[in-house]
Structures are given as structure tokens and as C-alpha cells.
Length: 141
Image 1 (cartoon, rainbow, N blue to C red):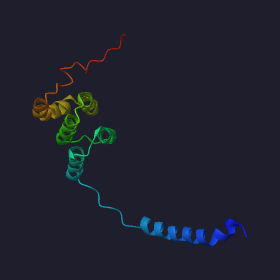
Image 2 (cartoon, one colour; image 1 turned 90 degrees about the vertical axis):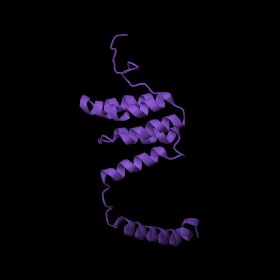
Image 3 (cartoon, helix red, strand yellow; image 1 turned 90 degrees about the horizontal axis):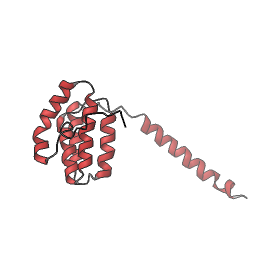
Image 4 (cartoon, helix red, strand yellow; image 1 turned 180 degrees about the horizontal axis):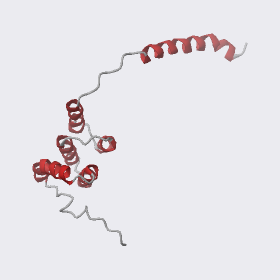
């Protein structure tokens, strides 16, 4: 008797059992949608968590800036304080650049976000994108 024939009843029972469990899990009721305030609070908690290192920061920032939603300034404030916690000035500047890109051509929205972030930037000693002339695009080399 071969090994495969001997194991066939065991594997068949295992597969059958796992399929019934996954069918039960997939038939669960859909979760209630999160409110905007809950999403903002979750992101602030994510970036304020003491275990949020640079790797986790980058993962969160990538997810945050790839979303279509323009987040509240409190989330960006938590991101900047997170950059300060692991002493990464370039990440803080890149965060400010991405905020500018995220606002697109809506200067009024960008001005509002920067107005809300002004006390945080002053507290952390971080210059704005305009102070560092990072908003000027040079096309000539």
C-alpha cells in the first residue's frame, strides 16, 4: 500500500472539515461601516502607539496617502510627532510634501491644513515645504 493511499482518508476528512469552517466564516454578516471620526481616531492611535517604528510609519503613511480621503490635521499631527519620536527629519519633510500633493490644486484646503498644523510645526521646529523651497519644481538640469 502506498503512502498516498494510506493518507487519503485523513486528508479528505481534513479538507472537508476546513471547507465547512470557511463556508461558515464567509457567510457571516457584513461589518458595520466605520464613521469618519472612528477612522481618524484609529489612525491617530496607530501613529501615537509607542511601538510604531519607522517601518510601521512607512506602512501606515503609504496606506494613508493612497486613500482618496483627505484626513483631518490631527492625523497629520500624529504622523509628525511619530517622526519626531524616532528622530527622522526627512520623513517629517516628506510627510509635509505628501500633504501638499494630497491637496492637489486646492490651495484653500492646503492653507487650512497648514494653519491647523502651524502650532505643531513650531513645537517640533520643522520648517514648512515653502520655507525649504521644496514646492518649486525645476525642470532644467
